Image: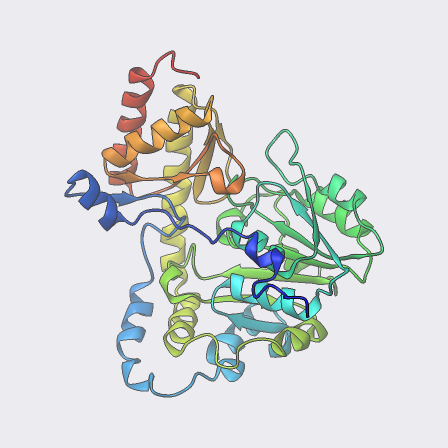
Amino acid sequence: MEKRPLVPPNVARLKAYQPGKTAEEIAELYGLERVFKLASNESALGPSEKALQALSQQTLGVHRYPAGGRSPLKAALAERYRVRPENVILGAGSESIIACIVRAFLLDDDEVITSEGTFLGFNILVDSRGVLTHRVPMNEGHRFDVHQIASKINERTKIIYVANPNNPTGTYVRKDEFEDFMAKVPDHVLVIWDEAYFEYANELEDYPDSMMYRHDNVITLRTFSKAYGLAGMRIGYGLAHHSLIESILKVRLPFEPSVPALVAGHVALSDDDHLEHVLEMNQRELPRIFNKMKELGLDPIPSAANFIMMRRPSADNADAMVEALMRRGLVVRGLRPFGFLDGIRITVGKPEANDLLLVSLVEFVHLHHGFEG
């Protein structure tokens, strides 16, 4: 009898997600008293105080299983987006919903299309399924080339994934591009519009809110991990035609998300004042960082999210900058895992953190003047 491998080849080939170092690890490594984490696109202002208060009152109920299917959060999302509760699915972050989509819809001979240089979580999940995935190069603006993606569609295409705005570049597909692209996608192809940074981009005149178009073959994914400051709670949601939601629910874990996550998400959704405060700070601080980077010749990529990506002259230069910033107590993200060997992504922090960042960038540029190899 032929011996079959315990681990399928498509799983054996995968590399596990490697999170960046924590603030505590950096503090211990370099003997620092103060460390700012600017690596994971978390909200610098944290969650709503109202959400924290609601969480503190929820501890007595954690011995009960969550009622996610009938939760106040699901009802509130349905009301906000003017859909029925059957059009809403909740998950432990949007990645959990992507995992369910992969399980629910992909067969062995199906194909997937996405872009190079996009969200690691999607790439890991779809590669674990072992299907053929076409990754289209980005255009010169570090944006999804949806025209080229549309040209790759064939009879085996089952899923197309678009992150809008994209992580880690911060760039986005415009309204005209969205409309032209969707007109070319057959009804049998499911398009995932991952809008994790929707709140930051929504005020842009040419940014397409995918929920405004109501395509039956689109699932819109959003999260409470970014602008709402609930990354540690793991709570996200999807919006789609009820037939898509029904299929995804069949393969989802039965009691997800958790009771605390449902409570925190519901209260955070209603705290418009806190969200406005978060967005105001980002609108003020992101241009300040971006403009200083341009002044220093660092060539940042224009971002519609809460982070900025730049590409350095070489991988060695990028590594040197990451190391220099960490020594100053600034944890940033090197982008080797995303395929950008020379890339760095920096989350917008509070003004104090951003002040230190800008001073440190000036120091690095002066110290490494002429080091372009």
